[in-house]
Length: 508
Image (cartoon, rainbow, N blue to C red; front, top):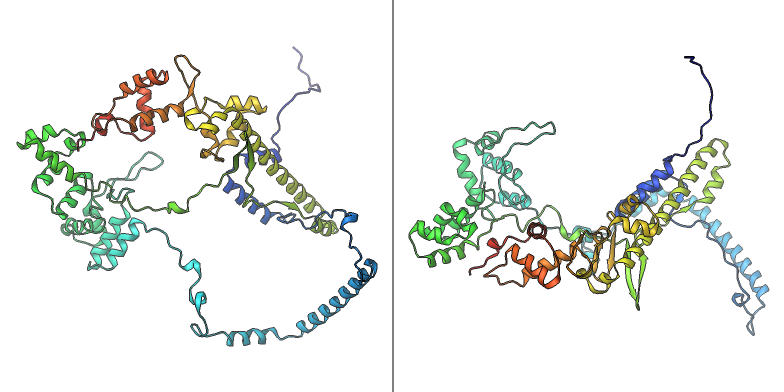
C-alpha cells in the first residue's frame, strides 16, 4: 500500500458564529433591564455611539412654509438680511463677553461665593427649609434591623449583646434560629452548632445562654429566635397568658393539632371535646412565622416594565413596543469624520464604527422579533385576550416557530424574561405556552386553564366538608369534560399552594 501526500479541494457548508452573530443572540435573550445596562456599557466603551442625533436630517421647506410679506413690513429678502446683521451683532457681543470672562479671577470669585453662602435657616421658608427628598425616602425594616434597634434600647451587658448579635445573624427567613452546619460544594458539611457554642464565641458563660435566649425570644415579634414551631408557640402562649390546657396541647399534642385529630387529644387528656375545640381556636391565633411582617427586600420597589403592549382597537388587537426608558442609539458621524483624519486612529475608529452599527442593527432586530412573536401569540390565543385565562389554548414553542419561520431556540430566547401588558393583565410571554389536557368530546384545553378550574372548584367548596382530589377529578370530567388523573390534580393543587382536603377543613 502506497502512502503519499496530495492536495484536494472540498466544499462544505457550516454555521460560523461570528462575534456579531453572538452579540445578536445574546441581546435577544436579555431582559429589558439587562438590555438597558448593556446599552450603557456599550456607550461608555464606544465613543462612536450617541444617545442623540448629532446631525439630524434637514427636511425641505415647502413654499407654504416660506415667510410671507405683510403690509408695512420689509420684504422677506430684506428681513433675511436684517436677521444676518442681528446674528453678526450677537456674535460680536458674545465674543466680547467671552473675552471678559477669561479675565475674571475665578479663584477669587469662588471664594467670594463661599463667603456669601446664606446661613442655614435664615431667609428660607416653605419647601426650601425641607431636606432633599432623597433623605426622606424610607424602606421597610428587616427583622434583623428591628431586633438590633431593640438591643440598643435594652439593658443587655456587652457579652449578652454580642451573643444576641450572633443569634440575630443565624435567623432564617421565618425568624427561627438555624444552627445547622453549612454544606460545601465538595459535599462536606460543617458540624451543627448549639446555643452554648454561640455563647462561648461571644464570651458569655454557657450556663447563661438559655436564659439570654429566652430574653431575646420575648422581643418583638414574640417567639423570634425559637428553634422549632413548638418552642415558638409555647413562648407566645406563656407570654400572652394562655391556660395550662392550651400550653399542654402545644407541648404534647402539636402533631394532633396539625392533623385536627381533636378526638385523640380529648381522649388522651380526658376532657370534653368541646374544651379541645375552644383551646384549638385560641392556639390558631398564635403566629407560626415570627418574620411574616418583615422582609429583607422592599417589595414595593420591585416592578416589572412590559416589553410590549397588546391594546384592543375595535375588533382587532394591536401590538406596540415599549421603548420608554431605553435609549435610542445613533452613530456620531461628526466625531468619526474628525477622528478619522488622524491616520493612527483610523483603524480604531473604523472598528468602533462597525461595532456601533452592528449594535444598533441587533437592537432593532431584537425589537422586531419580539413584536413578531407577540403578534403570533395574539393570533393563536385570541380567545384568551378576549375572555381570560379559562380560554387559554394549548400551545408549544414549535407552533410559534413554524408560524414565524424561526427556530424553537430563538422563540425560547425571545419569550424568556419578556413581559406583555394585555387587557387581561401582565404576563410573561412564556406563560402562553402550555401542555394540553384531553377533553371527552371537545378540543384539548391548556394545563393552565385546568389549574384555574381546580382553583375555582376549591374556592366554591363547603369549607366544613372540603372536596377530595378524587371528587375534583369527577367534577372536572362531568362539568367540563376534562380527563385528568388524581395525582395530576394533587400536583396542580400543590403548584397553586392549596392544601390537601384534610388540612383545608374548617371546624370553627
